[in-house]
Length: 119
Image 1: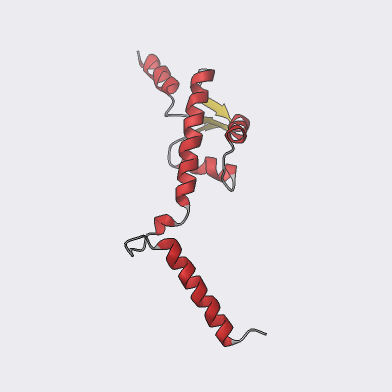
Image 2: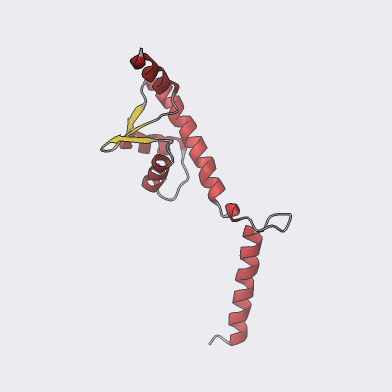
């Protein structure tokens, strides 16, 4: 049986936990501290590996299975790879080019191909 006192204790513990999570060292509430930074670090790590792979393969388009394989090789730590790829597409770091195919616009190979096609 849970008493009102137990419930209030639980609420107080949650408040302290959230305070610790969202308040920076200056006492300012900062919702960017919600753990998204690890996702951003993983995105940078993944995109760096994808750019290197683009250079090695001399191509800027990758199938989703190639993306999965790269994510496995680098030990990508994200809750859901499909959502992760969708998010990268939504912000323009990947461009969906067709069914299950994505382009890496930041690849130097991609830039050299587009400049050649304009000439």
